[in-house]
Amino acid sequence: LVCCLLAAVTICVCPCGFLQLCSASSTKALWFLCVTESKSRERRRHRWLRRERMRVWYSLLVPVIGSFSRAHSFSLSSRSSLWRCGAARGPRQGCGFLNMSSGDGDGMSAIVDTIVGGGRIGSLLADVSGPSAVMVGRSDAIPGNVSGPIFVCTRNDALESVFDRTPESRRCDLVFLQNGYLDDFFSQKGLEGSSHALVYFAVAKKGDAPIDGKTAVNPEGLTAVTGKWAGRFKQLLDKAGLACNVLDADAFRAAYFEKLIWICAYMLVGAKNGGVTVGEVQEKYTKEVTDLVNELAKAVSEKEGVTFNPGMVERLAAYTMSVAHFPTAVKELPWRNGFFQQLSETAAKEGRGDPCPLHSEWLEGVLKK
Image (cartoon, rainbow, N blue to C red; front, side, top):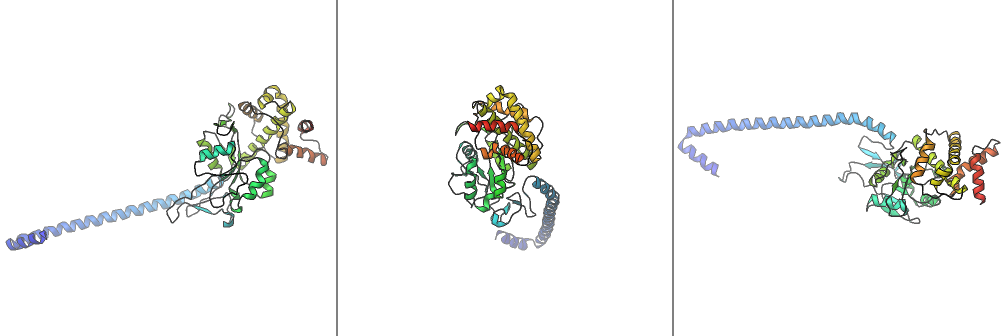
């Protein structure tokens, strides 16, 4: 309204001045439009350049991520999604895509840690996982409507029950923390390639701070994990201040048999000599346990084709002294010393020499007691 009044006064008082004003205003308006259009074109150009840069980076990164994923049990699709399982499986197995860019804007699906067993190790994992963790008792059903690892923190004799209570769609999420020889169980249940951890830390009693099995020989620690949920297990141990090494399948298999040899050798020598601690086995019966470790390692290499890293005797001796207070006993025979007992029995049936003569003699004597 004010502008209209001013224009009317200007026309009445000085028509020529009004024309000059209009001319100047038109020039300024034209200049403004040109500048605005130029800036708009520049913004469009920058957006196009950003899109092109993203397209080029994406085309370069996808092959790299693809090769990385094959080594770490997940894969990236062309639509930015992660496989939830190490091997591509159908939707009935619950191993479809974990979408990183869902249409509802929720982003990546939440990972929920399910922990079976509330003992010392299970409680530790629950504490570092946080309030979202789902604790499952030995007789409880395992939930099938969440995504994430299922950490099995039970004794070996409970594995059959855990497997039966796990929905078929979630069996690829099982993470086994048991000691001993699990190959037969895995093959019977179709669980080859499952996530598996070797625990080299100790919790004296429920709620106590864990003691890491780091040694002067292995300051990086000996705890190891492999499989689909290896990264998540390492994250939890990092929170607990514990070392953990993520290994590929071949490296893990050697570490797996090395842990089996440690349990079988030190427990048998300790039980043979009155149930002394593992520290006493190392200090008082060094030759016996060293001879047995070497014997069992040779038998495993011949049977399984496993090549152990040099210095196994020294590694196991150093670890033993970090947990010197552990008691010894021959137990869970089918899962532990039973593996070597079976090697000896098979060799006898085939008319071959005993691959584990010391083990056979000492185990027979302990079992007769």
